[in-house]
Amino acid sequence: MSAGSTAPFRGTVGKTVAESKPWWPEAPRPPEGAPNILVVLFDDVGFSDFGCYGSTIKTPTIDRLAAEGLRYSGFHTTAMCSTTRAALLTGRNHHSVGVGCLANFDSGYPGYRGKIAREAGTLAEMLRHHGYRNYMVGKWHVTPLTESGATGPFDGWPLGRGFDRFYGFLDAETDQYAPELVSDNTHIDPPGTYADGYHLTEDLIDQSIRFIGDHVADRPDVPWLTWVALGACHAPHQAPADIIMSYDAEFAHGWDVDRVGLPCNQEELGYTLLTFNYVFLQGLRRLGLGLGQDDEGAYLHTWNVLGYVLGIERAQMTDTVDDAARRFADVQARARGQARNPDPRPPLAAALVATMQRYIPPRPLKAFPVLLTRHLIGKDASRDLGLDGHVSLPSRVLFVLGFSLVRVIDAVGRLVFRGFSISRLVTRILGYNLTAKLLMDETRPLKLPDSLLNQVGVALHRWQNDAKAPRWANALERRYTGRATRAARQG
Image (cartoon, rainbow, N blue to C red; front, side, top):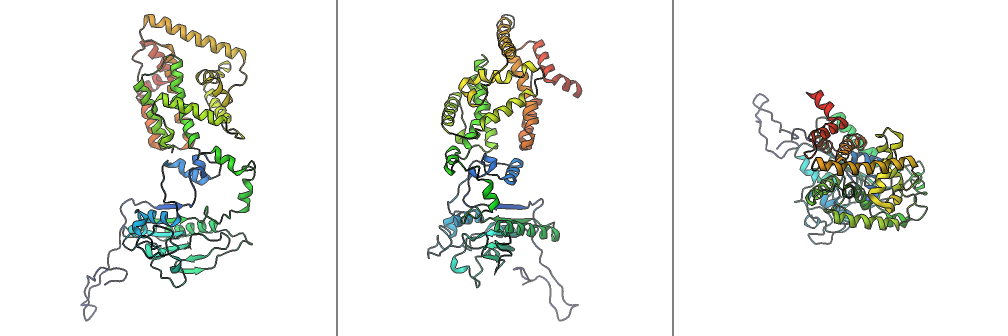
């Protein structure tokens, strides 16, 4: 047998060196393009605790990661520390791997031994056979208290379950300022104290960086798994004083007000989805340009797919205009009954209107987005969004005259061209520019997935003429959307 390998020795051992042949077992090789893996595990948090899902809690790093990747809207846990860890580490049901309850005690029954069964491989053990180096930092909590002392046994500790290095604590919780730390298989004193500014979270992140830095410096060709399980936000709740003080104003009105007003902010995300899909469809109906039932369903489905990508729960989506109308009215009614100070809707509406106004050069016409929104969503909703302010008389007159003129032109035009609609022409021009400029340009700071932006690009590229419109109307559309210029440039 060879050192570090269970494979039998395949060389030859003779009486002399000349008669002997050395042999070295081949080390596991990672698959081509094997990625580095970073797992960050929090206790006792949910959707309402992350800024990327609309929380008022500041999570800038997590928000940045979410903007560059995917946000999921469904997550199931076993509701306890040890059980969640056992399931996540093994990919199996927690009862089937011996951790059906907290790992603090061994109950004497197979499903409740308090430590992961040997026949259940951990992620680290699986990756080790594929050439990975594995590092564990933070909370372990899948070893019984009777086996977490200085003498072990160590087979249920991180280094006994596939990890190459460990820095953290073994129990469910520990003091954030004076933690019970373990380095590999040895209990150690913390490197600092409360008096000199030590905090466990900072220490764990520093150690994670150290593990990865040492790895990259020594073996940049080998992929790594780093598992970071923070002590926060589990008890004891010992956040640094400066972070606590920064939220004093946020919760000055009471801790439970935001709890009532923030159903994990999925409803606010769902309401945002409704403002894009339902309000648009309802607006088309009011303009006399309503789509067929199947087309409306397809339009709603398209926005639901986008909502899924952005992390909105399926329960917040609608499949028919009637369902959307009921949800829209319900959300508005409940929102009016919740005292939010400050109300986030008026600033959001103002920002959206200001964005649209940037693409309207003539000053008297800049009020048109506000006036059109009032017309489409009604007085109550306009008041909720802060769009009920004063608009100059010239702008209002121009809007009424323009709206009336479009209706007259439509009525006369249909006498000559069946199915012709100047309203549809204007809507198509605005829709194309909205997609090309707002969706493609304004959303780039959100760093949406490239695949999603590519889909928008494909939709623009395949934009076709209006089959119901005469040639001169399509020519006018191509001119004001810039499609004619691009086609000539490509030709």
